[in-house]
Amino acid sequence: MPEDEKQYLHEVVITAIVYQGDRYLIMRRSPSTKRFPGMWTVPGGKLETEDYTSRPRETPEYWYNVLEHTLRREVREEVGIEITDIEYVTSLATIHADGNPSLVISCMAAYASCQVTLQPEECDEHAWVTLEEAKQYRLIDGIYDELLIASQRRKGLKGEWKPMS
Image 1 (spheres, helix red, strand yellow):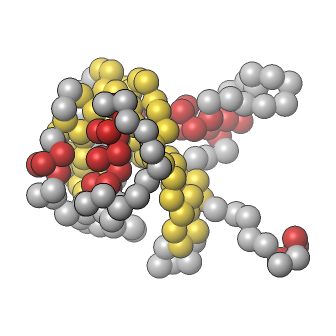
Image 2 (image 1 turned 45 degrees about the vertical axis):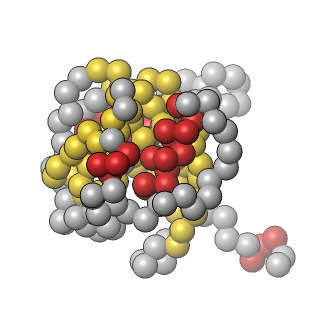
């Protein structure tokens, strides 16, 4: 395909599998949300240019830790908590029913502080669950597998995503 015909624009989404001990934070998306209403997921959101343009560059040309900054902001906005020790888990791409392509970067992070305070327009319920308990929730496709990967990474096991559930 010629260079001028390729499609490059994606919305970039970053998510956090937040853990505290052997429990993981999941939240139910509000019924009014555009995508996946009423389904359970992990916190996260879209990268906005302001996530880096509002900060000074770390070098003359570049902003660093842009995704980490975005993830901290999104988790703080959606569920009111602070996170630390962000690590990459996997990535995925999709084209939503509305035709918009998304690139999702899934990370894991340790719970650091604050009480969960939900942003009602985003999510209406939350739970701290074990892997076994997570099976009882109506999770967005792939979330349980990502929880499993995060659990394995926390035990020192490496590897790329593959269907596990």
